[in-house]
Length: 264
Image 1 (cartoon, one colour):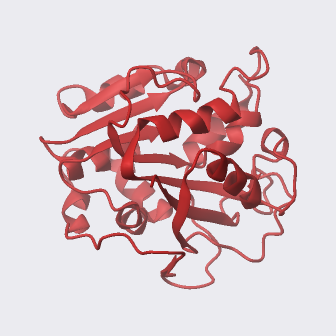
Image 2 (tube, rainbow, N blue to C red):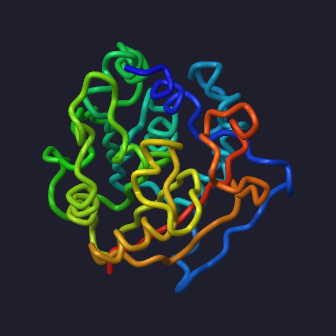
């Protein structure tokens, strides 16, 4: 598998350009019910890998977690979870009454090794690890999930890992239909991705590892999900969206959109 694909997972939500200290969420449509959970409680050091806490700072995980609206007792599907840094946060929030699915495509196993198993072993008892393509969540039931997250991932649908057939990671239309299938009515899909210029073809995802927001919006409309909130927390207007996300000139400072969709 190409090194660039591994980097895509390990980088995750990296720090954006220091344009402001803490951008606020921008509502687009009816606001969701205000959270009553104290998210600070899940960022207390408790035996998690030490690197996680540095990643939380880089990824602005406290703010991202609050934006998702995850609450105790929920069922969460964490798509393209990698080693499960966010999965663990979701696990801590939903608690014993909740459930989290940690999803990665089978193609990731080559470089993830046993990292997921080591994270889960004896610790994340409410987490189920599923290895499926992005267009097949068969272990997850219809309307079972309160929250689906996909952080820096949708562009992967147009990427072909080395040694794999085109479309190995999943068919785009089927993928978003699957997300809609597993969501409960009133459930949310929270997505983050590197911004490509508006009007850029979806195949840009396989080239610069970016996806235009208008492409995502169209696909969400096709499966009946509506935008309810967005945030500029990871925005960087200085990034014109044309450079490969791993180029040293923009790496870790890409302009990223954060969107929350709801299933009516």
